[in-house]
Length: 360
Image 1 (spheres, rainbow, N blue to C red):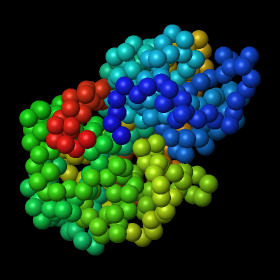
Image 2: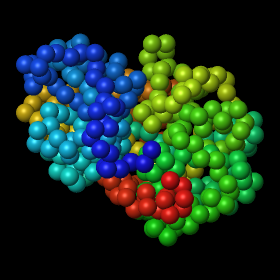
Image 3: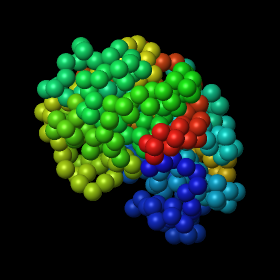
């Protein structure tokens, strides 16, 4: 799905879904309304924990980041939303550019510098990392390139590479490649990769399924897609995928013993890029304190541990342990390059480049 703010509001109304917790119109303004780019399958249990302990009637409207941004701009000053909970830093940066977010107190930005937003108007909630997934039956990981910029030279993988040009995390990676290496390098990388005849997938889960089946040997993805296979969530917890992953047949499971693993490029390589989800308080809210309290909950040890243990994403605050099967958070951060997350809002140039390469 191409991320664009051109999504019409009428289409958005078909996508939104409301949580089970709703109230009558007279009390609507007293509810905390959260626009969530995180899918219901991933966060509903966490929101329910907040409802139970805060006694706040939180109403969630779900959609993709681009759909929610389009809605917020369409609604303008009349928006009833209090919190924007986004799936990508690029969307949050876009919200900052469009003056949709209010300043956050320092207490909500008290996190490692690597995660703090430059604007101070939104806070990261969880982190994920780009990786190269591979089929352990087919690939000797010691023979994989040290840098993702060298991947186009791996002729032995011609026709055996999977990627997701239309998926947000891949586009974030290309944006980071453009920003850190320059547009000409990014364009050359895309064109060289195309010469290896990679297989394009609309989302990550079917790509990882193809990897497990031996249909491809390597795949550019996020770390948790592999962990969700090898370490499935407890029954009743996370069972579905992100919005961009909702496709027919997604319910089909992959065996935990599937021959898939993750490979990390050399320290600081853009192929190991750290990405974040995040949240901010909207300028239009008349419930700033309640909105900040909700975000404060997302940064609590309870919520951060939920993200690590259930969704396999990394915490952004110090002191939260991750499951033993996950790489240590400090080590994962060392793998990622230093990068100003809000620059991921520079997505339009990336989309144009992908269109020029006939990848969108």
